[in-house]
Every structure is written in structure tokens, then in C-alpha cells.
Image 1 (cartoon, rainbow, N blue to C red):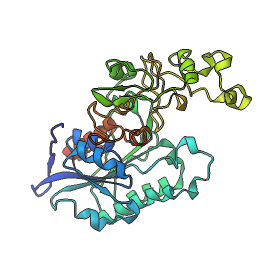
Image 2 (image 1 turned 180 degrees about the vertical axis):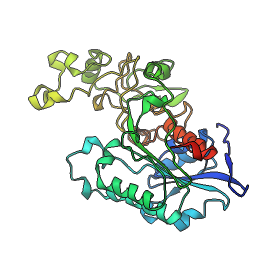
Image 3 (image 1 turned 135 degrees about the vertical axis):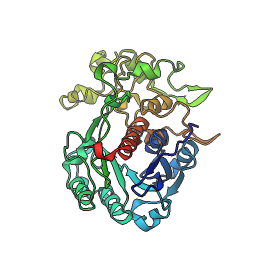
Image 4 (image 1 turned 135 degrees about the horizontal axis):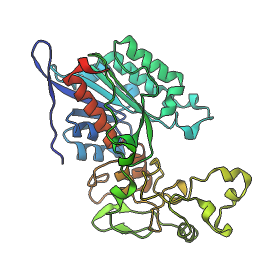
Amino acid sequence: MPHQRTTRRTTENGKRTRIVATDIFCGAGGLTRGLLDAGIEVVAGYDVDEACQFPYEHNNSPAKFRNESVTDMTGKGLAKLFPKDSIRVLVGCAPCQTFSKYTQGLDNEGDPKWTLLNDFGRLVRELQPDIVSMENVPELQRYSVFDEFLATLAAEGFHFSKDAEKRVVYCPDYGIPQHRSRVVVVASRLGPIELIPPTHAPDKYRKVSDVLRSLPTLESGEEHPDDPMHRTSKLSPLNLRRIRHSNPGGTWRDWPRKLVAKCHREKTGKTYPSVYGRMEWDKPSPTITTQFFGFGNGRFGHPEQDRAISLREGAILQSFPKDYKFVKPKGEYCFKTIGRMIGNAVPVRLGEIVGKTIRSHLENPESKG
């Protein structure tokens, strides 16, 4: 496990204080791991998905996993986790399917997840943290629930960027090898704060080849003996023929007509080219979703090998360490469960950027903004 550094900051009265965070909607620990890598102490993560307990605690010790819904949490309860002399940091990523572009046009406001960001805002009011960070899909900014969250921050005396464009992060700008955009809000009571500048220029973006080319070769449905996470879903004979006719960056339109699915031959199906495709070595990957292990669920085919990417490869593209464990020893490797944990995670590197932003701000809050 990486060594956990504890960052301290001297307050106005000279007292040394710890920077301590709690992660709401923590999942398998992507955001927590990133904060730890940046030197931010994390004491606990909260999530309703019990499957996340092992990966969260195993990879992020001594942070503890708490199987509790945000709707049942209180600021008073959270306050007990923070040492008296600490700078309190509250971070979280509410489940984003409600706001995703993939569900636009649906009756999202009837989804119970709609209220989760409001509960996060309630915890901000009750806990009175010093710093808050919230990450989600960019589409969230179109909804009133996001405006209400920002209004809560403003009413509580937080400084944060008012520029909607500055709040949208394109992940390759920060060294994440994935075409993924997220809205990231960082807010502080201590002074103006903004996310640190991009770390990677476009000509220095990390590519699929930078992180996946060295992994062992696999066949469809195979598992590597030294890493059970490096396993792939088995392709049907038809999909095996399809992927052999697929080009990196191409679509099902590259196939012989007899291999094209009937729904794609119809007029309504011709507008969905981003399924049944291969990734490209020399570019960042597509956005990793919870279904990335399926060849037909997006452009998730391996650039060269006749298979979808493995569970390990999906985790690496989400910037998880190559040895991050998601399953207990001798446990079951369920593609659906692990895919959900990986696809829903905050990329570890993005969590690290948030952590570095917090540290930079606390070292010299007067210069930020």
C-alpha cells in the first residue's frame, strides 16, 4: 500500500491542525484513494453498496467503510469522526445516472436519487465543514437541484467558481487516459479556491497504449492466472466474427452486411455508431461506463485482441492502481458487480487533483481565485 502522508496546516493562532476528509457516496474508493495519494487524510467512506466495503477498506486503510445512506446521516454524527483540531473536508459524488446524458428525456425528477444531492447539501449545513468538493456529470448543471446546491454553499459562506465552464473538467487534461468530462465543484470557507491548472497539454495526453499495452494477452472469456481481475467476458460466435471485422476507432458500419444487427440496419439504428467498436491505441479511451466489459455496450473492444477489455483494463483506464483489489481472496468475480464499482467510481487521478487543489489552497489561500 502507498504510504499515507498526513498534511498539517498552521492556523492563525499557530495551532497545528490536520486536514481530514470524509467521503460520501464513496463506492469502491476512487476518490478516497486519490485524496490519500495527494496527502489528505480520509477517516471514512459512506455508501449503500455493501459490495464496496472490501475494496474500500483493503486499499485505503485506515479509512473505514460505513454502510449507511446519506438520507440517514446527520452532521452531528459526521462531526464525531473529525479530530477537534482538524480542518474538515467533506467530499462526495452522488449517483449520477439520474442526470446523465444517457437518460436525458426521461422523467428523472421521479427518481429517488434526485434528492441525494439535496441531502449532501443538508450535511454541509449541519456539519459546517471548512472545505467541500462535489463531482458529477456535466449535465447536472442544467438542473435546479445543482443551483440549489450552489445556493447552499453561498449561504454558508463558501467561496467557489461561479464560471460554469471552469467547473467542467476534461479528464485527459489531468493525465487520465479517458475521454471523460466531469463537473467538479471545490468550495472553501477560508478563501477563494479553484481547481489547479491542467497538468497535461493535448500533445501529452495519456493514451490507451500508455497504460494497457504492457498487459498480458488474453482470449475472449479468459482469465490471467496471476491476476483474476484481468479477465474478459466471453464473446458469442457471432460477436467474435464481428470483432474480427472491427477496426480501431471504427464502427459496426465496417462489417459485412450479414453481420450487422437487424436493429442497426433499420433507419432508427443508424444513429448509434458508438457500439461494437474497438478502442484506439494512440488516443484516450472512451468514457468507461458500468458496462465496459461488454463488446456490444460501447467502443470497448480491445485495440488488437479479439475481445472486450478486461475488468483490470477498465480499472486502469479509471486510473486505479494496477494492484487495486476489488474482491476478497477466493471471492466471486462478478462482471456486473465489479463493472458497477469501476464505472461509477471517481477516477483516482481526479481525486488526487482535488486533493492537490485543497493542499495548494491551504498552503496559501490568499493567492487563490
